[in-house]
Length: 213
Picture 1 (cartoon, one colour):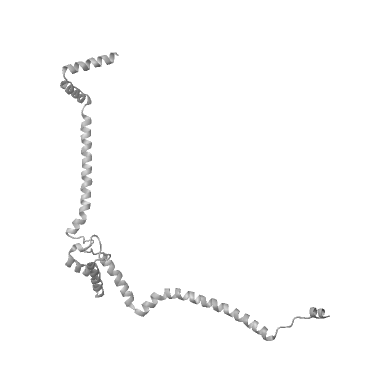
Picture 2: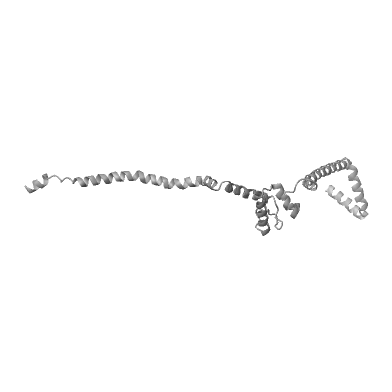
């Protein structure tokens, strides 16, 4: 009978407090997932947003100073790249590490900040170091002829080559116009005159024996 009672006994219902707690836990976990995802999205998106807005924020904070400084630096390098370092071999002021090049870059930036234009800045260095300080000298006066000299030399070389080719062709035509029989006869007669009579006789005898055999 005890076994029947134990088998027929139904499981006891959980207390209402336990049911309420479990439902609260499930609701809390359900609410936590969207909040967690939202937090992750914010943490992931903030660096990207800050990276994209940083130039605008810096411009708003510093005004034209930040933009002006950036433009001045670029303009300084551009002008310095047109200047030849006086103490370097084939290096511009922009990319030379010499002390003089550093000083010249500083002077370029100071003059740009003072409002001087590119032509005035370059003229300052020309007055100090001469026109050779420019990597590309102005194409005026003597410099213009120096720029044109390679082209003129190339044209002169082409004309001279054409003249030489034509001269060689005329000489070849003149040689071809000489009769070959006369030339061969003159050569043979000259060779025969130089031979000893005894040698000539031996050659004639050799030719006769060769053809008879």
